[in-house]
Length: 120
Image (cartoon, rainbow, N blue to C red; front, side):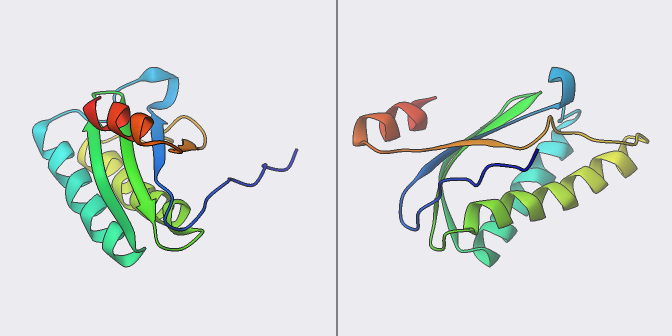
């Protein structure tokens, strides 16, 4: 079955959630968080996506992002995933997928929801 297209609009914030496969950890040591954040910053600039807020849990992440282009968030998450998964697999001597399927995202269509996501 083909993947359904994502609803992504330039200038409209998105709440992005990405979970570890089978709810397993995706961050194991402090350095993992730092590498993830460094790459998030790098790819957000390359993909022209503003980062408003984030939370990195041991087994998932929440991001509040606003793309300048329609496919900005998808390109950001794809680039970040490729780099970070390679790093984790090498660093922790593991193989295979790290993330559980596609990332989840929804448009943030009100100031109230924007503030709620930011507080989380």
